Image (cartoon, rainbow, N blue to C red; front, side, top):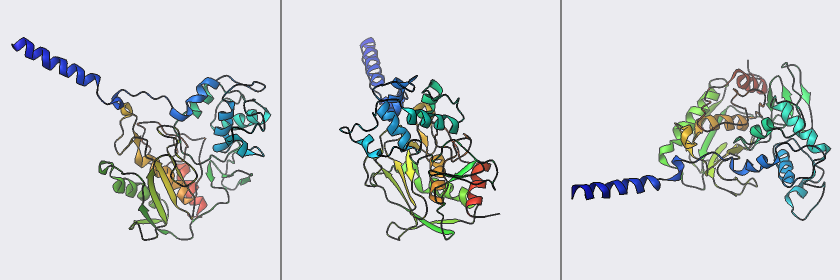
Length: 317
């Protein structure tokens, strides 16, 4: 009898292990950016199915600007031979490679593909590969304005006041275990410590300066999220103050890379930088304003470049 009981419970245990939630064994497949793998080694002159999506990627993040960008979204429009690797695409890839300190080949090599596939912020990079090296050395371009090693949002929008309020308005249920109020309070405080800004949480109907929301897919702002992996969050500059986070990601205040969890405070710190007027810093991976972040990675301390950027934007000593 004992042996039968042991066998029964052993079988139950085996079945329970087999049907545990898949999150424990889930492997990173790069979700919406996975198509880039099939395009590795493509180069100018080739016609390859999927290049159209590569052009849309580079257009989305600020590296490629055709005269008729809407054609990229319309399957019936054949402008610019969308699956043809043309001169403009080669130039855009070189710009991307230069921006991320990669070998500038104009070819979609493995290092470039690996960088492009990383989960990232949805705000465009606004770069063309050139950077100033000194705070006095301003360089202007159709897409961006750089000073030293950091970037400002084009037009240099900034808040006209230093006392800002924020609130939460999400279209999905956010788990209490995420402690979003504590997480965002900490992220705001890190920016407050190096500026004159103060941040106060107010009620949802109080007309807050900054509105934080967790949303899934199409959420009404014209920039739908793409599901797990891909784009993680996006924000608008002053004085809009909107900052959105993809609810299909696994957010955590104590991320475990084995579970493909994202550190919410690290991403919040980055997005608040956009809300204050900073652009991306593609050349310094240690900077909070670097566009990508890995699962399980924490980046909760402002880099010198982040601090210099915000102080320069607001003329703070």
